[in-house]
Every structure is written in structure tokens, then in C-alpha cells.
Image (tube, rainbow, N blue to C red; front, side):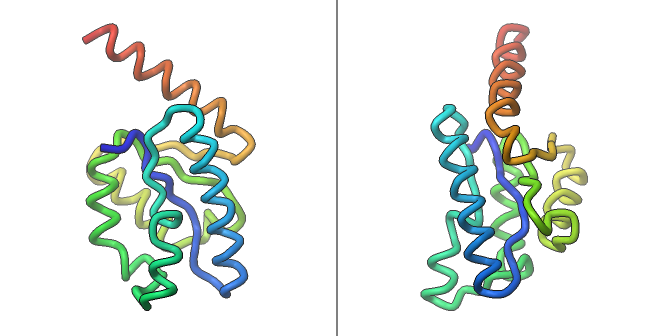
Length: 129
């Protein structure tokens, strides 16, 4: 199980997809370094989707991504260019809401602070159980 499912925009021109991939990869690496078990679907699937023609939009990945959202403790939306207009990101947030999953919107510059808050919240929840 992942601590965090990292959502955010992906689809666009090949250049936009590469840029979004790089931003998600950077966020994944930062969260990983901070001890957050993160599932980042764009990081996980970008290269395979291109090499093996698996599709790159939300429709192609919706069923699989929903299972990862269900398994994660929270969904985080990476607020990079295009996040608010992304159909896939919107669908992921709506799915998280529908199943009662916690979610938060995170600026890339605030990842470390959000990770610290997440860890403190989890630590507090464990102490009260």
C-alpha cells in the first residue's frame, strides 16, 4: 500500500508530456527521500506507455489508477501547469471524494512541508489508536 497517490496533469504534446513526466519524477524523488511511500502513475507508466503503445490519457489508465487510489492512504494533486484543467486529475479527485479518500492540493515548492505534515498526522493517528 502506498502512503500517497500522486495525481497531476500528463496529456498534451510529446514535449508537454515529457515536461509533466519530469515534474512528477522530481516530486516522486523528493517524497521518496522524505520517507513517503508514493505511487506516481505518470512516473510508473510514462516510458512503458510510449514504448509499448499503452495509451497515455486517463481513459486508458482509469481502472488501474482507481485501484491504486483505493489502496493509497491519500491522494495528492501536484499543482503544476495544467492541473486545474486536467480531465484525468479531475476524475481522480472526484473518485477520491466518492470513496471518502483524503486528498490535498500541493504546490511543488511545498512538498517537503506537506510530507512533514503528513508524517506528523500519521504519527499522531498511531498514538491515538
